Image 1 (cartoon, rainbow, N blue to C red):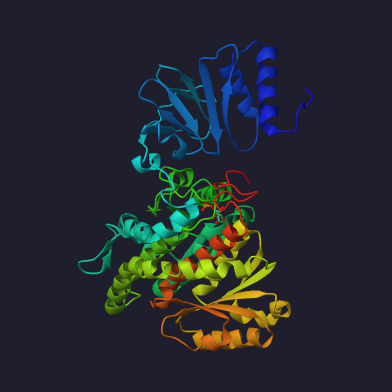
Image 2: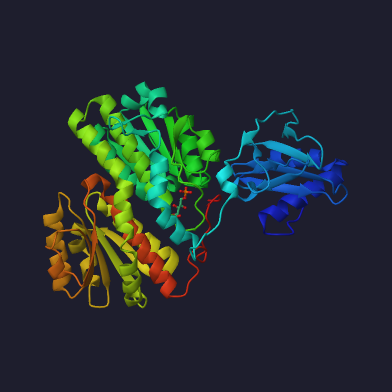
Length: 497
Ligand code: F6R
């Protein structure tokens, strides 16, 4: 049969029609035959013009959720968010399942071999149906400002204020495998990968378990070595990122315990993992991830401290002190958000930059990567994040008075060394904007602009320091008149490779 289109969904429809006509089959039977032949991921809905009262949906490796309305109506989407306003009940199709939807009639599900399936009905989170920008001009700004409350939600019932301890059911349920893990592999993409880099530092420092962080897209195709005793953590806001899902499935098939850190409840990754922790920061609408990032870092902080306590690799005193400090982070984030007006005024200065550098060390190195990613995504200014000491190995050649350099220079072990890195940039005419800890004036003389942040333990600095960088990217993009929530070429969930 000649191909009539280069679009895969159009080819699939042609194939189904061809099978119907050449074998005298109905659309459901023809679809079952077709889907046994096709390779790859799909989430499809078919309407046969001869049977306009029936919709047939099928999925494999791409998400598909069916909302069950109260009046016999159905709602189909790739996640629960868009249908939450219409129904609170949903069915998530499994791979190779086909659902037949007829208005007013019960949902029927079979697989591609035509065996009847009985999927469970799940409740949709009620808060999903209630999404608005409120008084904010963009979802991104709202989500940046929501972060203190989001982190409180994320810690609720997990960080216990009575005795400054952490209780995680996932750790209780899989205590042996997690505490005895010989290695942890973190797989994720984009911003979630940056959170993973912070998770690595937290887990290695407090739990003394070696951690590797990989791009899910690379991990899935390089035949990775997975050893008995490995734990794989898949981090994903949407829980639908195709590469992260495939990496989690691969790890599971090779015998690893797979642990999910997701935001979207009921998402594919959360269903594919053995256990995990939801970040519970509420739906994130802005394409540029903000509150999901700080939620992921909060979950990784809780996980690291909880596991370290179980493994006795942290002293009791340090454990309680750090848990107490984690509890204080939302309030400190509120203080960090007060830099908004200063950053709004500063932002137009950077509107015409063509390139920017973000520098940080230790826990703040991933913050530099994340700050640069935010700027790239929504302002379309090229930006790179670098570990500050790496500057002299190449990128310092780029420094001149045209190049804004953002340095995360908050109080931390490596601050003295970072100060020398800042001097190197200054000596070459770089224009420095420094994030510093309030009360530390040692950076001021090298910096053109200083943004002061509240003090915290260095391991929690990313939760504070990422806030002004989110605001900076936001205000620069707004100054350029760009659509912050829906930047060009980007999708909120990347459900394809
Ligand atoms: C950046 C951003 C992306 C996502 C990445 C992974 O602001 O949103 O880089 O972080 O596409 O998405 P999730 O976390 O849904 O797997």
